[in-house]
Length: 315
Image 1 (cartoon, rainbow, N blue to C red):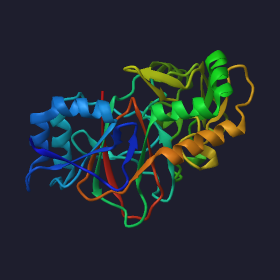
Image 2 (cartoon, helix red, strand yellow; image 1 turned 135 degrees about the horizontal axis):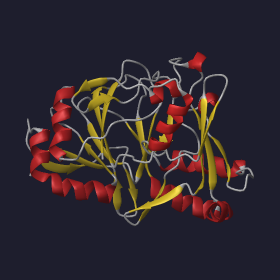
Image 3 (cartoon, rainbow, N blue to C red; image 1 turned 180 degrees about the horizontal axis):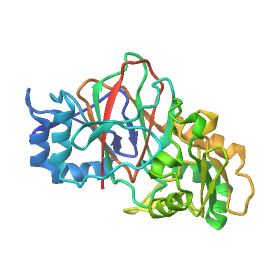
């Protein structure tokens, strides 16, 4: 076998499951793509059990090397849809996010608001930030369990009436302004025709209504829907109720399905659970992180440049 089990300082234990699972090469100079090709069925079971695998110590020196690792798993490629910028670096490989590194990108499941979303996400560290820039990960079922413990009445109401979530694209004047949500609906749907944009939105997004505003932004409303979903018998807090960043322009507008406000104490409890439960992964050059997008949320901590983290998503 091309792997030996290891430990990192940041890892957490949830029950008897270590998070993330860390694998090192069994021999110096072990090629990660070749090792994965031999063990991919086993590795698929490992990521299902642990939610995330960190491959550390392998010689993955370029975007092309990373592309070979992704291909070795044999999962189909999935195209990215979203209102952020990503640059292609190699086949199946893109920059993770072009938002300025000094901004926090909040916890979320990738493309959770789309009708189709990836089952797996790979991240690769080409260049770690000299300060900060950690990728944070958290098991989504633990969020659900702790919210049920701390906010039982809120969870009961969510089951009864659901949640309404409103998310907006950038305004015309704010496009490429350095926000996490940096693109307009015109860029997102590749048209400036509202009728055609709405048609394309309904094909791709799981929204229930769309409102085009005079400032060039568009507001997408989701729900009433329960933010918790179940995949493979495991619950996941799937909808991004806090928005995608700490920027007030990116914050989601959240309410119960009956129109009443979600208590601030519930939102604070949710934030607290994320911070108390997450693992802040301190990147090392050459690291490859595989996460199960159906069971794990991820985020990005602010940091100092330069930082180069690449990503690949799979169906």
